[in-house]
Amino acid sequence: MVTDTPLDLSPVAPPKSPTRSRRRSFGVLVVLAIAVLALISQGLLHSLNYFDTVDQVLASRSTIGTSEIRLEGVVKAHTIQRTSNGASFWIKGSGTNEVYVVVHGTPPQLFQSNIPVVVVGHFTTAHGTTFDGSQIMVKHTASYIAQHPVRVIAPNGSVR
Image (cartoon, rainbow, N blue to C red; front, side, top):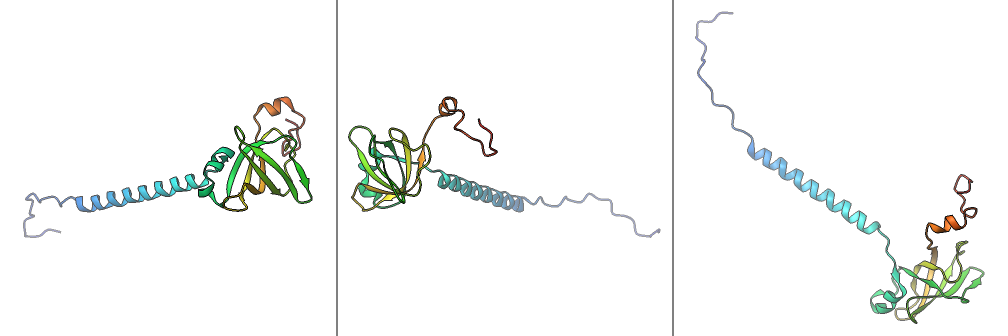
């Protein structure tokens, strides 16, 4: 189609760059990234399960009170008493530090004297030394498998 008006071919100024919206988008992305990192780090920190040694616990009994902790120590020889609903025994730290433990539930098969264990539970009173446990975890190294290969059975039934 032909028109009588000439076309305006003079240069036109380019549109202004959207720097304000770019800054806003960048700011939103930075805030989101910080929020995601904060959530991930908090999740990881709260999912870690540390344990306290007998010595650490006895040194800070007033701050621990009756809150649930994981107590680590070595089972004192000749102190294990099996009961109808669990076991009781003494665990020791370094030196003469000892805690009396009463555990409700069946101890693991590897549970015995003179081995390191971690017991999940709480003290019965805020200043006492009797620890009420709900779970015993036996600590052992990978050398256990090498020394007792027929005792370690994989979930599929094969012997490792």
